[in-house]
Image (cartoon, rainbow, N blue to C red):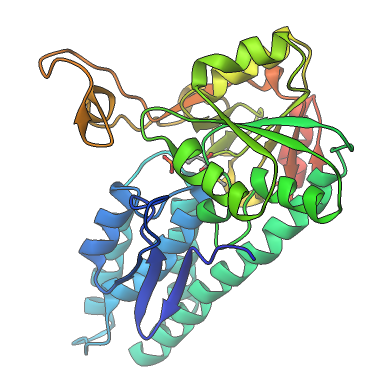
Length: 344
Ligand code: MRU
């Protein structure tokens, strides 16, 4: 059974608080825009597609059900809400894609009474949510065609149901291969500093009874050298028009190791994760997070408090290291010049 990560329930956004996993499954109802911005920042809700849905639904929380003096006042509030939610995390373009979709919906309905615009916005946000379920399953279908019986797959971070509405991108491919009864082994990188691989990916795969082995981030190269891994599947937070891909910090290390060992490295991401306004990876904004995430593990000090840290949350894998990008519109292979035609 897929995980229900995010939903709209009684005028609130219901999420699984991912900071509590794997120890507790806590559902939380978010009722105001400040709490939503904080939930995204704190990674209570996380993963590019899930952040997009959170942003779209967050717009509803931000505009509320109050009366507005006129359309000008409503538009002013909507602009504020969109820019406030957009300030939560910079890298996953799905957030900005979803917010722009909401802005466009309001614009299309601008001549209608505010109560009608609000209804149209709710419909749009729920469409973003519903479509994610369908898109993930389509990507899974294409991706699973690349998996053979007996494959041993490495994944990094969490690109599962928890990073989407319920099924996942890279993990969706693994779920589908498992549903198709292919015998596969999965290795999950723990993914320091915030351990999404250990806390979330391992949790999802164990829950589905898929053969998963948790490894520390510095073990992948050795497993590859020993022939224990023969494919890599990861998600993405933003893909430039040349195919350079931003994903969780450490993804680039994995790609370099996979290339050295001639192991195919696949990225699984919906069309909404492409940013064709950006030519190459260097131009993708990379979130930098608090040094305490490096100094501590699960709140406990592991280093002197005074030590300097550097904590970029994402890195960029150059397109030359990517074997293919799997989208809901099909598999894009190098050279990635087809991106411009496929993603419009
Ligand atoms: O910081 P996070 O946990 O939001 O980072 C998530 C990732 O890097 C995922 O791999 C990415 O969003 C793809 S998820 C389908």
